[in-house]
Length: 250
Image (cartoon, rainbow, N blue to C red; front, side, top):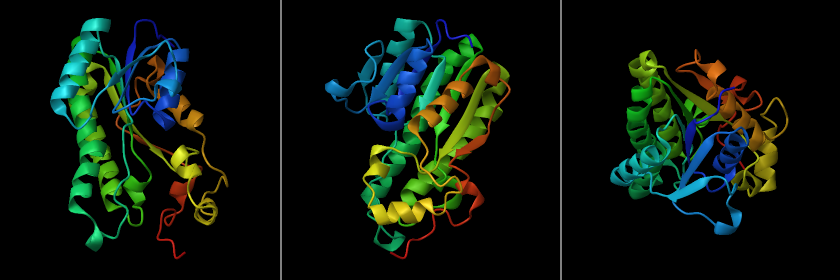
């Protein structure tokens, strides 16, 4: 696995899966720049990583930050689009329109902006890896989270188009679809809801953040160069169950 002088940019790097991806890539020898809207200075995952505060919904900010990274490190070779929010839990008829817009803006538009400005460096070098963190909600829906499911589904379409347009430049773009992963948000779920959800996971356990990070690490590696435009569930087999994210009656 060639990592020397490869620069990786990870969004949503301040906590959770993004934080674990940052640490894993740094340990493998990549130069890593973590982006997030805010960071807790006491919880930064790796002192060897550079962290930059940026709003992924602001295309001008993204453009400036990516230009700075390219100027500092010579290129942007790897992009992991991980930043996302869930802030609009409601049935469609009751859904707040401004919250809908915000969730789409962070979860989908942010991926587009980061991808757009990373591609310049990648096409120039004729090498690049883009990994988009979507969700199994993208393919099966999720009750009372239409904006989240729609934003994550949009990522899948964007993933395919990047492949269609840029594979000939040595660039891969793939999507990972996590299911129930042992993050802070899942840990805070009421126990009865968590137990009900786990009954629908064939593996009968939560996934670990490190498992997602290791999959990212493989997809950005040299040996993964012919894997392009695909959607990889990492969900303990939940995608085999068509009601894995169905409406809870509790």
